[in-house]
Length: 163
Image (cartoon, helix red, strand yellow):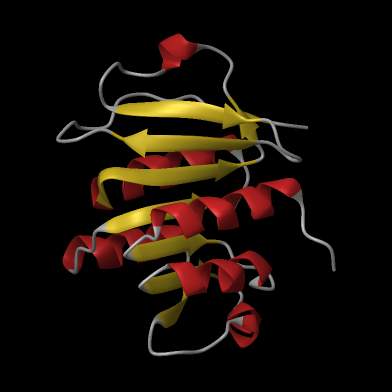
């Protein structure tokens, strides 16, 4: 199975950033997840489908979480983690992406990255100045990279699915 441009971009980004904790929401067959694992100290994959975990390369540094993204966000509220690289790739609906963004933003480390698949930005004014930076990456399927600024709370972001 060939990989698309956004996956290659994310792997190269992980190779450069070397996240302490990589979290991917939505795994499918773990192709991208497994490619990022060598560049992260720890990796967590979240998916509602139990069979998704069968594709994960198991190690002491990987963890499969069979749950919805909302359930995992509640788990993080009880047991917080600092996420350095988060890829939101589960439910691609506008409402779900925005909900994931808002629920997981508090757990992203300062200067941490949030990646949004199948997206692009319509207007810059959708971003609250100072809380994060958004950069659309022109690769297949569309990808938006968000960098969380230091010590700022979440602002407003609008998601526009790329068709």
